[in-house]
Every structure is written in structure tokens, then in C-alpha cells.
Amino acid sequence: MMTRRTLFGGAIAGLGAFVATRFAGAPVARAAGPFEIKHTDAEWKKLLTAEQYYVLREEGTEAPFTSPLNHEKRKGIFACAGCDLPLFDSDTKFESGTGWPSFWMPIKGAVNEIPDPSFGMTRTAVECHRCGGHLGHVFDDGPKPTGLRYCMNGVALTFKPAAA
Image 1 (cartoon, helix red, strand yellow):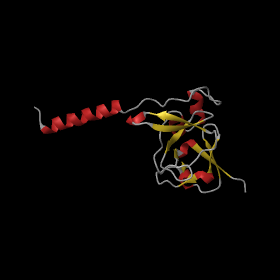
Image 2: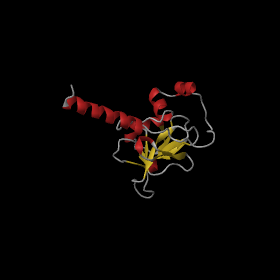
Image 3: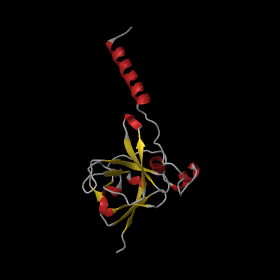
Image 4: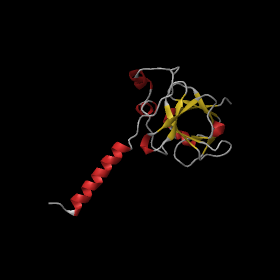
């Protein structure tokens, strides 16, 4: 017997299935050419924690407000957790309120920016130039002088304090 509850429940389930299949998105288009640092999936799994592997190699996202790097205020360099390439100078870090470490500019030549059509929208993904590890995304709502916000997964980064 068809009731309003079964009809409504079926409509919600159908909408959920549509959204899951329509907006799951294609994988991020990887930068052309070989990366300097290459490992098999098995090697990456040995080198990285499970969360680092999820973010860097599977293009995942860590939960907001969970990275200790959100609160890092010392002078130094933020590097790729996958290959140790210096990516961001601490002088370009700012508090965006988004829950992820944010920077207004990477170190020249350190990152690749590639279109990311996932979730039914086009964003710009940011990956490490040397190993291809997924770092996060860049948005055009950052502070001067660039107006950009490189919203990075803290788990994809390490911090190296400047020498005293």
C-alpha cells in the first residue's frame, strides 16, 4: 500500500542516488609528465600514515580544525609530507577561519594547479610539483597581495622551523 511516508522516502532515496552518481565527480586530471619522486601504491602506504595516504594519494580531505598546523605561528617552511619539497613560507600563512592551514602564495615552482571537476563544480586542485601528492585547493578569496587562498590539508604538510 502506497502511503505518503513510503512515497516521500522513495523520493528522498532516489534523489540521494541521483546526487551520488551525478556529482561524485571525475578524478582530478593529473599534471602531464612524470614526477621526480615515484613510488608504487604499496611503497606509498609504507611511507605515509593512513590519513596521509588518503589525502596525498587518494585526493581525500582531512576533517577541518584537526591539524596542529592550523596553530603554527613560528617562522619556517611548510613542506610536502610525501617528499619533503618546500611548498610554503610561513610568511605567507594566514588565518582563514576555514579549519585548514591557508597561505596566500606557494614557493615559486613548488606546486601544480590543475582543474578539479568533482562534486559538480570546477575548482582548482593543488598538488606537489615533485611527487604529485594532493595538497588541497586554491580559491580567489584570499588576502592581498595575491587575493588567493591556498587551502591545504595539514596532514599533507610538515613544518620545519627556521634556524634560530
